[in-house]
Length: 174
Image (tube, rainbow, N blue to C red; front, side):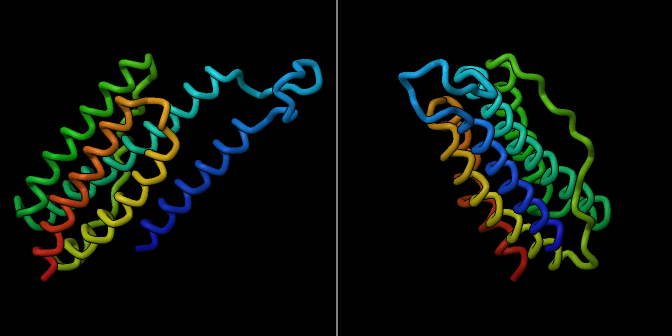
C-alpha cells in the first residue's frame, strides 16, 4: 500500500512539473519579445509525451515485475500468469509508441512490489494496483489529447485494467 501511495504521489508530482514547464511564457501571445519560454511548443509536446509514455511503461514494468515476484513465491498461479503476459503485451504497445515518436525506451529497472505473505494478499494488492492504474491512465489521457494514437493505446490499457485485470484479482481475493 505504501509503495502504491508513493507511486501515485510521483505521478502527481510529474504532472505538476509538466504543467510548470509548459506554462512558462509571458501570457501575451502577440508579443514575442517580452517573455521567454523554457521549451518551444513542439519541444514541450515531445517532452510531455515522453513523460506520459515513461509513466505508463514504468507502471507496466512494475506490474509485470510484481507478478513475477508473486509467481516466484507461489508458483505459476492464476491470474498472475495470464496478467503478466498481458503486461508484456502492454509494454510492447508502449514501446511501439516510443519508437514511432523517436523517443528512447526506458529500461526495465526491475522495480517491483514485494510478494505478500499469502496469495490472497497478493490478489488484494493486485486489486489496489489495478484501481490505481485506472486513475493513472485518466491523468495520462488528459495530457495526451494531441495524440490520437497514444489516446487509443492508453484507453486500451485502461480498459484491460478495469475490465479484465481488476475482476480477475477481485475473484482471486475472495
